[in-house]
Each structure stands twice: as C-alpha cells, then as structure tokens.
Amino acid sequence: MKIAVIGSGYVGLVSAACFAEMGNRVTCVDIDSIKIEKLNNGKIPIFEPGLEEIVLKNKNLFFTTDLSTIINDVEIVFISVGTPMGTDGSADLQYVLAAAKTIGETMQKEIIVVNKSTVPVGTADIVKATIKSELKKREVEINFQMVSNPEFLKEGTAINDFMKPDRVVIGANSDYAFNKMKQLYSPFFRTHDRFITMDIRSAEMTKYAANAMLATKISFMNEIANICERVGADANQVRIGIGSDKRIGYSFIYPGAGYGGSCFPKDVNALRKIAEKHGYKASLIASVEEVNNAQKIIIAEKVIKRFGENLSGKTFAVWGLAFKPGTDDVREAPALYVIKELVKRGAKINAYDPKAMKQAKEHYLNNVKNINYYKSKYEVLQNSEALILLTEWKEFRSPDFDEIKKQLNQPIIFDGRNQYNAFNLEEIGFEYYQIGK
Ligand code: UDX
Image 1 (cartoon, rainbow, N blue to C red):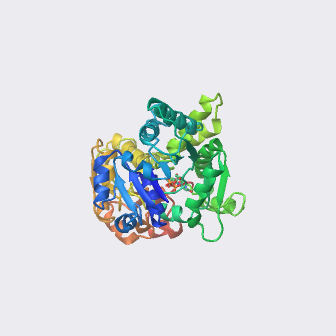
Image 2 (cartoon, rainbow, N blue to C red):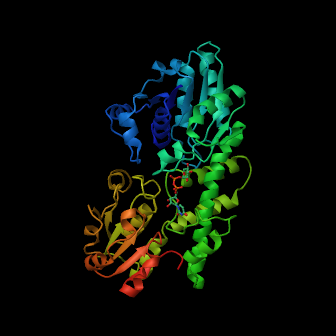
Image 3 (cartoon, helix red, strand yellow):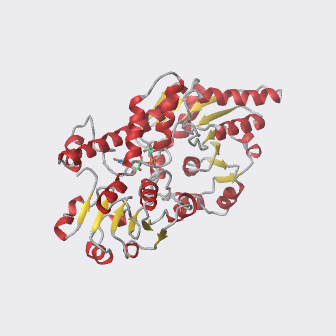
C-alpha cells in the first residue's frame, strides 16, 4: 500500500518505519526541513533502539516537507503530530489542525485520513470539518474517510511494540475504512489478528483511558509505598503480595520516583480537562496527577531530610536523567524535578546518563546552574555526598558497590527505583534509602 505519515516524532517515525518494513511504500512528511534533511541523510533525530537500522536500510521509506507532492499517490494519510500540553493543561491541537488544513488544501482524490495523534474525544469531527472547509474554499467535492487509530507503543521498545502489537484499535464508520486498515495491519499479526473495531469517539477515548489507567496503577502504588514507609511495611513485598492476584497483575505497580515521559503526564492532564469541559469533575484522575507531582520530588525530600535544608557546599551524584531506561527522552523526567529541588537549596549536581545527557543539558536543564556532566557512572561519584539513582538503566542495576563506596565521600545511596533492595546494602556498610520502605 502507498501511505503518507505526517509527523516524524516518536509515533510518526516509528509507524512510518514499521509500515515500510512490511513492504508498504511510506512517505514521512514533516514541516521541519532540518529534521527532514537529516533523515534524508540517514540521521535519526531521536534515540530509539532498532529505528536507525530500518531508516538506513529500508528502500520503501521516504522523507519530504511537501505533502502536496505525494498526497495524490497514497491511499491513506496518517496524522501523527504532537499534541503538547497547552497552557491550561488541555491538548494543544494546533499541529493536528495544521495537518488537516494541508490535507484539505492538497488532496485531489479520495483518501482515508487516520488520526494517530492522541487527541480529545471529538477531534476527528473537527479534523473532518477542517478538511471540508478547505475543500469548500477550493470549490471541489472529494470524498474522504476519517479513522481513529490510537498508538500504544512505549519509548525504548517502540519498534517491537509496533511490529508485534497486543491490539490494533480502529475507530471508523464505514466498512471500506475498516477493511483498508485491516489490510494494512494484518501482516503484523502472525498467529491471529487482534483488531478491535469501534466507533471513532470510543477509539479516541480508549487511548486516554489506557494511559490514565496505567498512570493510576503507578500513583496508587506510590501512595501505598508512602503509607508503607510510615507504618513500617515494605512496598517491595506488598507489590508482590498484591500482583499475584491476576485481577491486579504485576505490571505497572512498581513504586518509584514518579512517572514521566511525553504521554502519561500530558494525557492524564488532558483527560481531566476533557471531563471538565463536559461538566464532569474527574477527581480520581486529578488525584493521580497530584500524587505523581508529589512523588517526583520525593527523593529530593529524602535527601533534604538526611542532609538538611541548606545544601550549599554539598555535591550529589545522579545516575539517570531519562524518564525511563532505553530512551534519551527527559520530558517530565523525575530527575529534572529532583535536581531543581536540590540546586534550589544550594547543592551541586554531578550527573550521568548513558543516553540522555545531551537532551537534558541542551533543552531541559540549560537554565540550571551547578550541574556537571560526566562520561561514566563511577567518575560522576567523585566528591559527592551520596548517589541518587533515578533511572533504572541496565548498567546501573548491578554496579560494583566497592567502587561506589571508594568514590563517594560517604557510602549513601538514595534509590528512586528500588533497584538495590536485594543487595543488603546496609550489611555492606551503606546508608540506603528507597521508596516505600
Ligand atoms: C506510555 C504507555 O505505556 C504507552 O502505551 C503509550 O503509548 C505512551 O505512554 P511510555 O511513556 O513510553 O509509554 O513509558 P512507560 O514504559 O509506560 O513508562 C511511563 C513512566 O511510568 C516511566 O517514567 C516509568 O518509570 C514509570 N513507571 C512505569 C513506574 O513508575 N512504575 C511502573 O510500575 C511502571
């Protein structure tokens, strides 16, 4: 099939690459000419395992800034642009609507317009109206179908998630659209298909409900962990105790320094706003967010409790800046919040992350003074009062504790991801702080 994907961010680029891997001819369109030039020269703007190999070798994948040159040669156009958090917390639809406008301005024949961006319920109707109004301006009548096809991929495992999906949700209102989408996705199912078809608004809502449910599990567990700390229980054991119940399950109940990333914070907030707009106060969703906001600085609070409010003259070593392992993405990462809290009190930070230092330094911590970046996990510990672990990268999971002790001023570890619970650190002379114990 010939398809176009508007947007070359995480979702757009991964979708385009994976569709191309399945033999489709895919053109990825982005208004950012620098990004497109880089992609045409084989340079990938994001770190995502496996993505570079596909982009470099696949002969079916093309990049352009000009939708008009290809739109009339494709059957399906995906909109996979960003929907960042607007100033009031709701999803900012300007990029989605700009894409819709371009489609309306350039299409000459019938196509299927698929929305893959996470958008408030009802956006498909707005996209449809935007395209129609452009067609009207041009005084042409062309049929097109709207589809909502939310994406559930996770950063760091995006290619695998896309190539072997748990489910493909398709919201549409014609058999023609359902069938075309099924044709496109069928090759991704090896044993049996996992299509879930529904109406467009339910598909739009499914994405928000999935992310809010997962975020709720995390905030719930973090709240339990905070109670565990106060009553002398161990959240690590409680997690296993409750996860064994199949109705609860083991996944997404790891207590930690809070959830970050480009989706959960933005989508939980947006869902609360959608409810508000429709006259409903989503108090549970609001609490999920509130618990997470507090959780993101919980490790800083533990450091302050141990070292006092005034941290001037003290340096702390941070392992991990990315919001989770396997990505260079630091958007809404707990590390940003912890670092800012400590620096505010006069502390100096030595930071190390295997992949995310450039992103953090250039875009997210560029205004924060008193941070030094190091090239290795042991070097970063020098002259530091304590090690603070904030992202559970594999290289941090089983470190040389003798080396850590040798490098730090004092053997103290604050573990924001409960990675060293099994190492009996107290027995080997560490002061060890974790979440929920
Ligand atoms: C998420 C959804 O999982 C994905 O389906 C959706 O399409 C986009 O949002 P992603 O943001 O890539 O994906 O990351 P994910 O692996 O879900 O982790 C999100 C955050 O939750 C991370 O900060 C992680 O550290 C945190 N987390 C996750 C916990 O704190 N505890 C857990 O038990 C699980």
